[in-house]
Image (cartoon, rainbow, N blue to C red; front, side, top):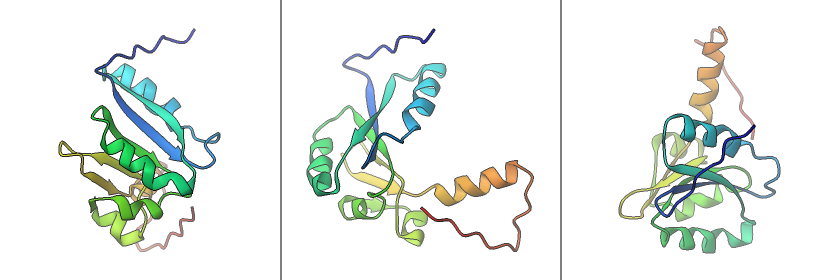
Length: 137
C-alpha cells in the first residue's frame, strides 16, 4: 500500500522538466526520500516543450514555493541562457542537469552527471584512475 503524500501551502515544489516527459523517474526517487527524511517537499514531472522554456522559467521566478528542478533533454543546454549563475561543472561540460532558486529568486544551475557517474563506477569497484570516459546524453 502506498503512503498518502500530504501537500500544504508550505510544501516546497520541485520539478523534473523534459520533452517528452513520460520516461522520467526522478519523482519516484525523490518523493520517497523527502518523506523518509521528513522534508515537506514534492517533485512532479513537468512537460515543457522547447518553445515554452522562457515563459516557464519566468513563471517559476514568481512562485516562492518552487525550489528547483532536475533538467533532462532537450533542456540541458538551452536553459543555461536563463540561469543567473552556472557552476564549474556546468560550465566545463556546457550543459546543466539541475537548477535551484536562491532566496532572491536567482536561478543557480550546475551539472552532476559526471560526478554521479564516476561515484557509481567507484562504488561498483571499477578503477578509473588514468582512464577516459565518454558520456553521451
